Length: 162
Image 1 (cartoon, rainbow, N blue to C red):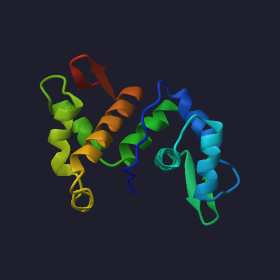
Image 2 (cartoon, rainbow, N blue to C red):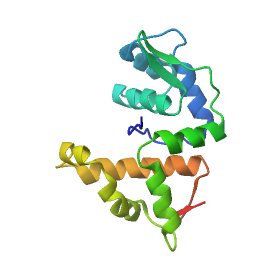
Image 3 (tube, helix red, strand yellow):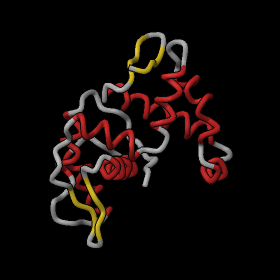
Image 4 (tube, rainbow, N blue to C red):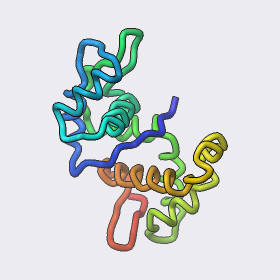
């Protein structure tokens, strides 16, 4: 299973642990978990807390069971985060491939232009009137996370494969 929701990348990876610790060890509903994330972090509104909860699931730092959502007992170690990020988030492998094949740094817009055909058909239909807005933001967020996870370098000229 691959996930698509990606929050804005924080300034450092330590913040991931802060958000993970806001998810309860005792199962809770999505509403309860999002409220708890919002209370214990500066994340708002609720949709952003939901995005973080989904992203933590993608990184295997939270899980959804029959009784609700819980925090896993896995520490957010960089190596595991990189592996989960590459394996469990939609499009990461393609974005890294785009950057690896590029002759030089690319802007997020240039990466999106090369990625556009990889947006799933159902997503193209779902966001037909806002496809570029929604998916260019997702691509940029993925790139920023890739920088934070040391998979990609970024400078004034753009992004490049690390």
